[in-house]
Length: 400
Image 1 (tube, helix red, strand yellow):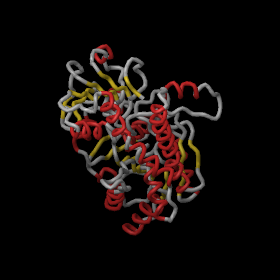
Image 2: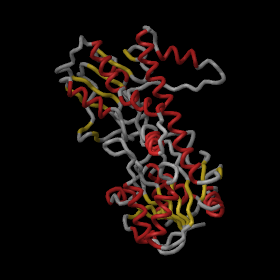
Image 3: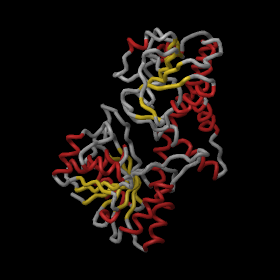
Image 4: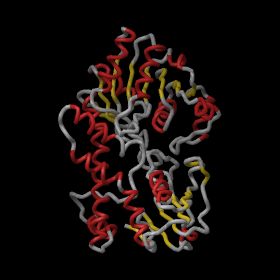
């Protein structure tokens, strides 16, 4: 078993850190967020995939140690980078967190080790952004591998152990070493020919989903003009046992991966003179879905929602989790304010959002259901005069 460091203790980092610790590795979980580290230190997990009892046990047995002191990484034999790779305000790739992790490694890791990046980025990141910079900064020839994360928060069927992984090293030896390490806590680990293949595979996985979501979002608008239900159409199409995979429309695309990863691929492709028109068009469609939802609400309410109390139900980006990253609820609430409505939100899983607390369902004029958690009281929703359902689960409400 190894001494492992994981930089970043968010949804990916904590899941991987505890999975490795659970099989006997000694894991240091490093994060610059001191409040997060303090909560983790008392066994308070912030992700659905790691319960508090498991976290406390790993801490008590010394297998998992959360810290915001980067010098604690110095003795590690393997270090995993699991930091966010978001978009900036101009919707361009932002590697600030990744570059900060690299700076930390340059300053505090003086022995040759295996460095693995789980952070999603464009092909060439592990080679050019991480390895080259560390070599120039330290002169140390570390071993490197890419192992793009595959974490689906709240998924009860697929988790760290049984989700197949793809890894690749800058050398055959480092790739094999990374594969052997992941096999200690993951059932299937596939070795790709080189890191660029592994990095691009992750972008392809989520671009596939983003494009198909855009397709059904556009179909939902077309079906409306034909005066038929897109959900009935998708039900019918899904009876085909081959050559079809169902995707569902929604008010937008949230989460840290699906609405972001395709832009990394599109942006880097354009730098090389190849324009990814399909990804770019999909991005346009998905980003305009909040506006489309509001247009439907306006049309059903005589084009006037000024002064109306409008409740957004489910502000997390998908059902039954508390993750609000990239949620379309932000844009919908902004549009409601623009049209003069009194916009509030209700989500039993999210303690605070945009500086506000969750509102009650009662006494609302309009409700827009973005996600339907199990904890939402549907009987109360039925008492609201007008409900627009973006989930397709409320057959009595208005919707796509």
